[in-house]
Length: 73
Ligand SMILES: [Zn+2]
Image 1 (spheres, rainbow, N blue to C red):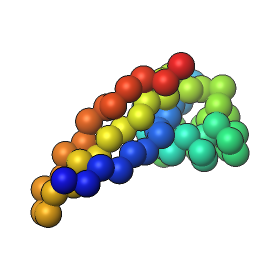
Image 2 (tube, helix red, strand yellow; image 1 turned 90 degrees about the horizontal axis):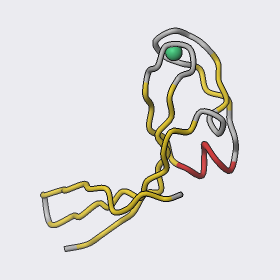
Image 3 (cartoon, helix red, strand yellow; image 1 turned 60 degrees about the horizontal axis):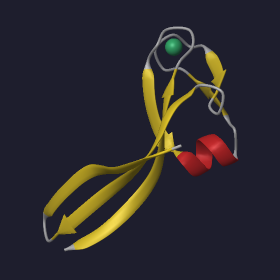
Image 4 (tube, rainbow, N blue to C red; image 1 turned 180 degrees about the vertical axis):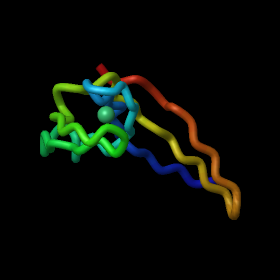
C-alpha cells in the first residue's frame, strides 16, 4: 500500500454557489481568479475559500481509495 497526499481547497462561486475543488498551491499561493463554469462569473479563489483539506490517496495495485486525512485551518 502506497500513500500520496493532496492539499486541496474547496471554493464556492459567490454568484451562483457552485462548489469547486482545486489544489491549494494554485488557489492560495497564486491567488488566481477563476471563471465559474456554470454562471460565467469571475471570482478570486483565495477570498472564496470554504475549507482547506488534506486528501489522502491510498493506492494498492489497481485499487484506489481517497479519504479526507484532515481539515487544515
Ligand atoms: Zn457561478
